[in-house]
Image (cartoon, rainbow, N blue to C red; front, side):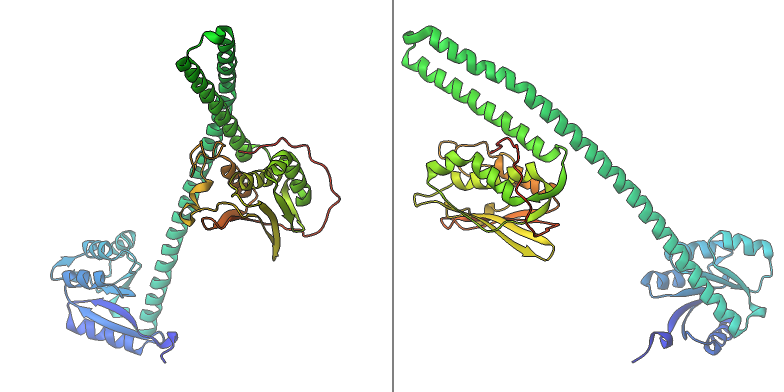
Length: 399
């Protein structure tokens, strides 16, 4: 096996004088490691074609070629292969020309009558190292510029999202009042008219009130989504037993009406916001209550440790979900069923995703139609010990 130290590296020798070419090849052959494999061309056109094929470590270039001369030779070669270091090897002892060539991109300038193997090898090595250092510096500069651009883009996006969330919150808040008035005056108008309403008019009123009620529910759901995604978090140790207790208390009437059996694993302590995590359990349990089958409903709050993470979840034996909808159900206002089948604004699972995302975790569902669903969420910073229960004052937010 050939080691890296003994592998031959390719030098492109651009020289039209056969004697000079032989002398340079002989000097390279006598040089110490690394070994150099020489490819010799006599014209600029041939050199450009060879450089474009790649694999050249460094080029030794004479300035007087049949089809080119002077600084134009170096410029043409660098245009073909900007990353290949160019070392000028010439018989012209002209300091002004040397400076000009270095300014045009050449790495070094050697006089043919001064060349000896050690000098040539050292010059080539330094040329390669300088070229690599320059390329690395350029790459670092590009990375810094890209990082700066990305930072600006992220900040612009954050500000845009913040402005959009603020607009959504205030717009939704301001829309509630006119919708409440529509509800109120529709009911008043129906009462004022009394029995004089025709059957068609009663139907129209029912549609009007139902539309206003659904609009009110959508606005309320939008406000809940904004709060879940942008409300300031109060992070600290949170006993999920407390969160589950508050969530189940909030849903107690629905649980009783569904005659649901609640099974609970011991829940851990995590780092997070107690109010948001309570809302998470409210919406997941509320989702299970909504999509139940005719058989007795069983809801299980699951928990297991994964190193320093907690794998938590809510499992039910309800109607289940087609696997192809496993991702889309977490989008806002995405409903898989008509309003005449199941109530709700289609926002509950979107709130769940917002809450889990803000805690640095992820949420998904494992389900099959008719076989129930197991919503799982992974939370970091699981402390895994019990705290003394502390009651939470939390509004019931179920989408």
